[in-house]
Length: 297
Image (cartoon, rainbow, N blue to C red; front, side):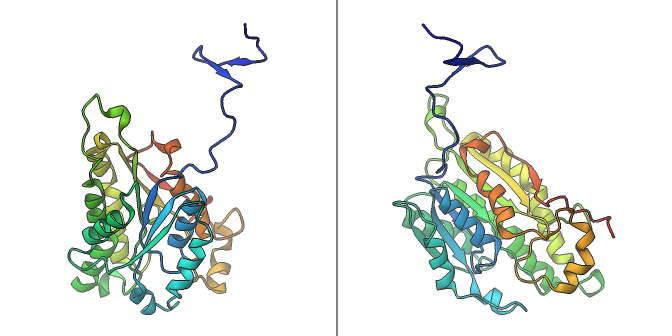
């Protein structure tokens, strides 16, 4: 015979037993293999996602393309140091695999997924964090070459990565009898805040990132029957090493929490979307901006 002290009622009439495990699973990605693209700088969002997923028990496949960073004003990081940093977050038997690739090159998105799946045995989650930063420019200076370059990295590569990820064995549409046994897959794309305010001087980047946000629901609809959730995250203004003191002063009033975003702010949301806790969420474009208010001056 049970007592009220042993069970508490739920609104739907069921009961919760104190014998059930309390709290949340500290390793919700244990045994999972997560591919994160654009993991080339320790101050970047990709590195933060890889570390956070590793903290949750996942094994990591980290894609990187150092030549892009070499061409940028902030310069490149030491890729070996980036990987060493991620390794410090691995739990138990989890492992790290790294794959260099130019995702703008024909066939490379599919090759990266195939190489990752072969090396890891399978992939459970994909985070498309890669992005091209420059060259870019305002409308009056835009060229076909710049538009095409951003499309190839910021949008086309994400779509092709998702295609290859979903084509893995085990993600085919199951029969009704198999539904309870299939594994949960997750894809997270990254967009920007182009739908919430202008991105001055970034026509090509804004266009490509808008395409990713715009196609999210369609891809989510195609893949939900295979047990794959698809969401897109706008990480908001995040300081990944490019923010100057002048930038901080000019935008101080726009951040009600008194600071720019940090890479792990976005990583916490993105990594949670890979867990089973988020399995009911798909087709969404979610902003993680800390209350950033573009209208404040």
